[in-house]
Length: 76
Image (cartoon, rainbow, N blue to C red; front, top):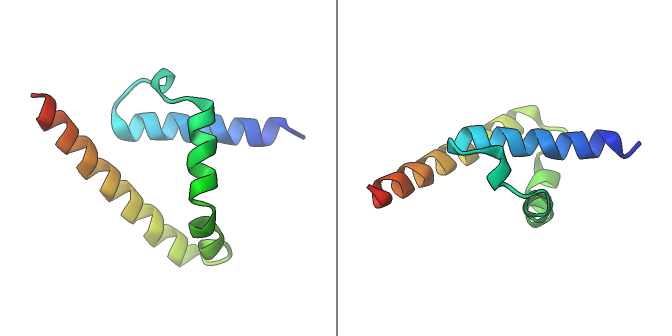
């Protein structure tokens, strides 16, 4: 039964890498687990509420994209 959570974490790694326009190899498995643990209260808040989940996910993606843009311009 451990295959499902393991695969879910790897899927999150791939999605995060795609959102940040970097290689999935730069994102560590343990780091993903740490982020999930740190965000546990936010995840518990949206469970069972698909509209709130969608809104929170959109907010996170917008924040991540703006941080990625700032990082790219800082290196330029």
